[in-house]
Structure formats: C-alpha cells, structure tokens
Image (cartoon, rainbow, N blue to C red; front, side):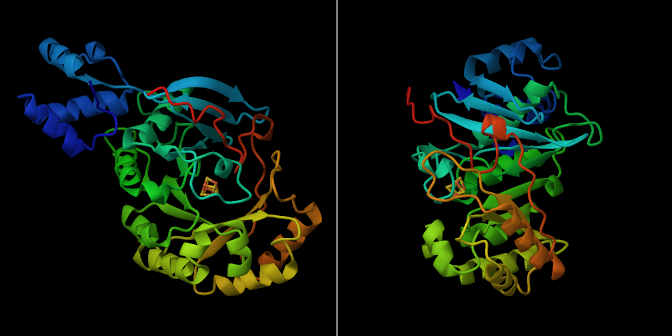
Length: 353
Ligand code: SF4
C-alpha cells in the first residue's frame, strides 16, 4: 500500500488520474488529509463511498506513532515518534504564552558529528521522507487536538523550526517537498515567515532557502576556522569564508533581506572569550544577523564544559554594545532532555525492516 502523506499536490493529482478519477478530487482529498487531519478514508464524508473504498484498497494515510510523550515542568513537550519501518526520532514543542514552535527532525541520527551535540553521537541511519518530516508536525497537532487547521490567531502550534535531529540540507529534496506541503494554505497552512530552517553550514543549498521564503538559522558556534574545525567537521568542507558568502547570497535573494540567526553554543575556554566576540563581529560584517547564545547542556561523555554565567553575560554584553541582538537562550525542557542539542532517540538504530 502506498502512503499518501508526503506526496506533493501534483503527485497526488497524478495518482488519482491514474485511478480514473477527476483531478478536482485531489483538492478534496488534500483538504481531508492536511486541513482536517483525517486518516480514515471512510470518514472522508464528501468523497463518494466507491471512491473511499478504492482509496482504502490502494493507499494509507499514516501519522507517525507516538512511542513516548513527556511534558516538562515548563510545558515543553517531547515525543519519541516511530515510522513504519520502526525507526524513531524525537520532536519537541516549545510553548510561549499563546503560541509556540514545533521542532522537527529530518534524519534518523546525524552524520555531521558536531562534537558538542548529543545527537551527533548517534549513528546516521537514514534520511526521513517528505511524509515523515510533515508527519511529525501532524502528530504534534494530534497531541494538541489542533484539527481542523485553526486560524493563525488561535493556534498554539504556530511555528516550525527545523532544528531537530539531522542536517536538513543534506536531505534537501525531501525537505523542500515537506515545506511546500506544510505551507500550503488549503492544508496545514503554516506561513513561510513562521518556518526556520537551521543548518550546520552546508553552504551550497543555503541560498535556495531564500527562494522558499523561509528563515535561516546557522549553527555557527565559532569565530574562526581553527576553532570551527575543532568542533564541527563540516567546516573542513565548507569553511567560514564559503559559509558567510552563502549567507550573503541568501540575503540578496530573500524578499525583505531576511535576518539570519547565528546560533552560538557557549563552550568553556573554547569560544567564549571577549576576543572571540570581537572576531565574530568582524566575521559577520555585511550581513544582517542576530546572535542566539546557547548555554551548553552537558551530556554524559561530552568533551566540553558549559561556560560560566559570567562569561556568557560578558560575551552577550560585548555584542549588544555593538548593536547586535545577542540574547541568551532560555533553556527549555531540560528536565526531559528536550533542550537544544540534547535530542537522541535511544532506539533510533533499531531496524525492524
Ligand atoms: S548540531 Fe545538528 S548537524 Fe551537528 S551533529 Fe547535531 S544534529 Fe547533526
């Protein structure tokens, strides 16, 4: 049986034409799947019964299964979800007062091996399909009962950050299809302005994110190549000069010269000194950026220690005195290991296939 979630609208239309159905049926089916969140063909009441039966004989509509769900004291919620082949990833909802962002994954494990990242210690198993990327958000909506698609003003799950497990731009084709589905106004309808894609620095795809209209976050974490080579292997392939040039091209191509968020994890004695802050400002000259300073969360066996509060505040102050926004990220969901860089699906490597 073929899974329908993850097919682009055109691909879905082609499936129906191949079944001998009229193309306009695709619009109805799309609405049931992505606006109403319905997975049972027999409950899609605007479709004729014989058509429902035909669909049920050929296709499935499946949201990833929730294996565990944990809610933090600060209301952050984390799910371990499982796909059809038994592979699992984590995704997280980070609530604010009346809205919030769902952080979704794009790969099972990660091949990048950033040395400060817990996910990076988990072997890369495979890319997620477009359907599996979209499906995580649909499962989050199941958990909060946000079906049918609420209006922009009334939804809690208002934003998407592609910052979970994996390097999104190493799974770019599936990511692009998934984003187009998530943004489609007749379905899930998350506006492009409310989606942020984070990359460890795969420079060659960065400018294309401007064409999709989504926001960009870069896991920068170092002010020079020496330090970045030590902590992020991807820097040997895409050194800072190439990465910054790609960011400039992203801004040239984006509609309103979209700000870029530079993520910067604070590692004691590695990248947290005043001279690093000054070097950083030099590095991003010519770009519109804001920094996001992330206190490092120690995990068992991590080769780094967290910077002191003093060092983090001193670093932030230097940047802010020079007119850069440089907030210190408030840690969320630490008690359930849902904070940045902590995601790891212990059973991610199980292969039932
Ligand atoms: S920071 Fe991102 S790219 Fe680097 S190892 Fe972790 S998940 Fe992979």
